[in-house]
Image (cartoon, rainbow, N blue to C red; front, side):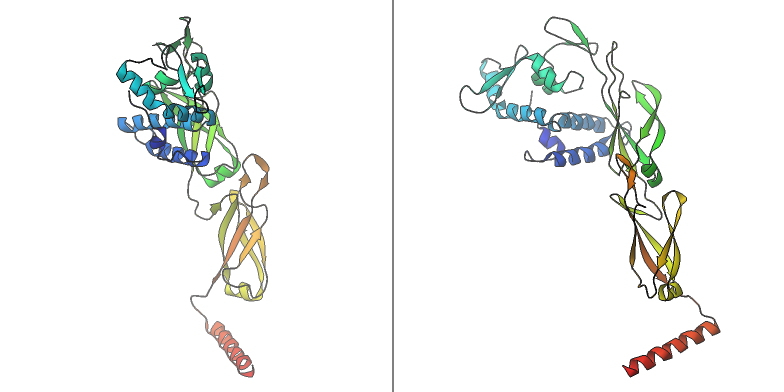
Length: 331
């Protein structure tokens, strides 16, 4: 059995930060998700590998144990070849807890299960060395006393696409979840303020557990649809507002669109330049986890020049040009 390099699975260095590991996992999970690649067995296998790797590297304690195992992997291989004692047999494995002689600690199966759990669909590598020593029978795990422990349901991943308005206000969606050849529906609530790439946990709506065991969780991966008017940057929104030339020159009021079909009034001072940005406080996105607070809305002024002039309008512009020429000459 070969050592599984979880860092290589996620495409990160061993020195990667927790944030880098999470970003790599999300990117790969979206790419290889079975819903995105229906019928693709290779993508399904890759998705399982990615989840197994993140199950370990995404948890600080599990990652530390895995790194310690990796440092002793060659010693285990040599013991296999020479017929020497197996430090992993009989439900135990040995890790270097600090280097030097006497710095090893032998973990029991119970300790391994406490760290890694018993409900994850890990590979043979993981089951052999981190918690799969007991025999599996019809989805359950054999303990040392021979008793069968029912397996908790697996966590499931599902991608959900939202409009900007839905992300701002929160939304309830009815999803169809495929499991074991059957399809069931579940109503999920996405809270206000989620962003593109957010991961929302729906407790107990994953794979059903066996023999009365608890169900897994459902994780929603949020994708936001592009909006025809607004651009989102974090908690703030940006919108372009068209202004007639006369309003930009003389000043006046403009209507600014806001989320939810609302409209706001913006006072424009005289001689406002094209591209001027106005900040409307508290008119942006709802803050995640704090529905009573919002970001800001930034309106960029785009001055519209007339495409055609009447005889009277042309006369006024000519008069304005003569006036500007006289002022320039006087200066």
